[in-house]
Length: 364
Image 1 (cartoon, rainbow, N blue to C red):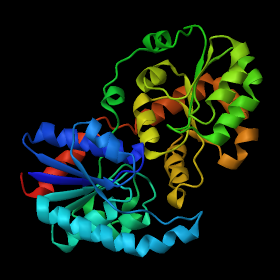
Image 2 (image 1 turned 60 degrees about the vertical axis):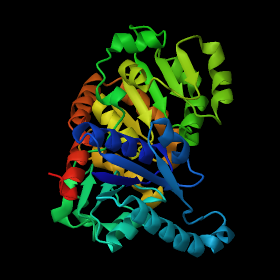
Image 3 (image 1 turned 30 degrees about the vertical axis):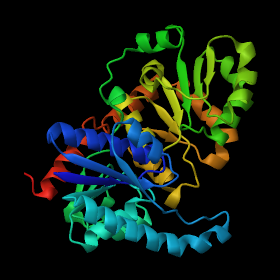
Image 4 (image 1 turned 90 degrees about the horizontal axis):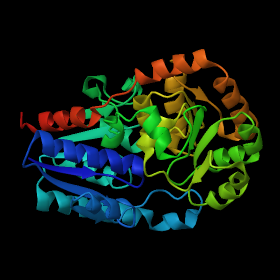
């Protein structure tokens, strides 16, 4: 079986792509994979590090901040379509999988034009414009949320969940082991603050502004700040001792989740999926400028099941720490939220999707 997996741009697209690739090779040994990304984007570096082959398309998205940069967009769209046709001609895939990101659309569009089966992995609870167009001809649409009939043909939707890192999906790390990894005490409650790999300015500013108040609660803090805020975070935490940890990036996220009693996070699809598996009470602060405001939709899908709380980005300075303290003092609410969010966790999403890919390829 020969499969193209197209997309990327962020870790939230790249990780599911890699997870699906590994699952296909486990379930169908001998599967030949080719990844397709956008030249200049992080997948061109990250995918080869995972041992997979990738080719790049010359494609970019619509630039809302600098409209002049869009003048070349029609040419890039045309060129990427020609490049996608060449990939199909040279590789001759049995199936093309789209995980979102710039390269996903031209690759799936070209495949559908040639009658090659396509599968969409829609990570968010609000589908983007490209996937809504592609969904009309896709053989299968794998989703993580209920109610996606708003965007796609109901008979082709399959709830699979979003693939997460194996180190998290299969983790059996205890709270004690998680705390020990950060040199923290078992006697105190631990708050984990994480805003994605690049950090989240509004969350970071709220934590920095209220750090003395938070320290007064006699809690511990694990704070992933991102590159742009680490110096400021180090400055405000340096006088508070070793129980207030600020790091640019957490490479051992499975230990951070195990150590945490409460989490503050953005509501990207990957973060949401990980938190459902970790089963922790969470306060989401959705990034408001994500396409179609999909992070707010992701958060609300859990909030409406009493599985999470949410603070709007523009209310972070006033509301986040207040809500955090309220949750910290309410043990029963913590237990209810943890019990509810874990019901939405799907640990084998990668294999569910891989089995569907095999099914539509005609290999079963």
